[in-house]
Amino acid sequence: MNKILFLLIVCTVLSCAKEKEINQEFGNIPTELISALESINKGQVFEINLSQPNTVVGISGTILIIPENSIVDQNGNVVSKNVFIEIKENFTKSDFIASNLQTMHNDKILESLGMIFLSAKMKTGMN
Image (cartoon, rainbow, N blue to C red; front, side, top):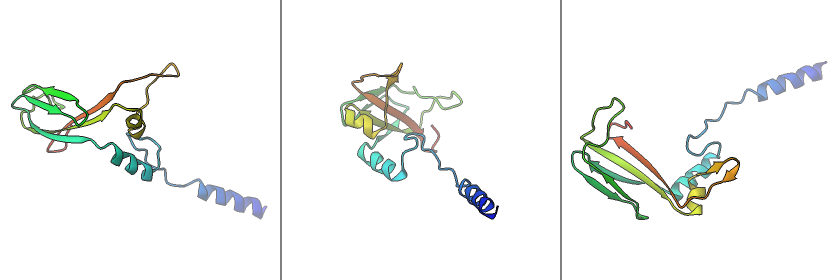
């Protein structure tokens, strides 16, 4: 009886482990691997002034044309200040793997010639 009670207590204690936080971009991949993947395909960051037209060109040739006053904040107000634009260009299979990009439809792999991640953030950190 004591052995069963001891086993029950051990199982209870071991099952109370702290849950790991899941990374939004990479899912349940170990933290060490995430930092390695992030260093392989770093995003390019550009600071632009939204009160004038802008053209941003990525390392792999992506051209992003941003007309003046074309970005709004979460309240629908036009942003006319400087913002940071981040671009991650993914055009090869190794880019897809490094960025944890997967394209599936009806359990079949879709082929892609490329994918681009785009983010715009104000200096206050708001998207």
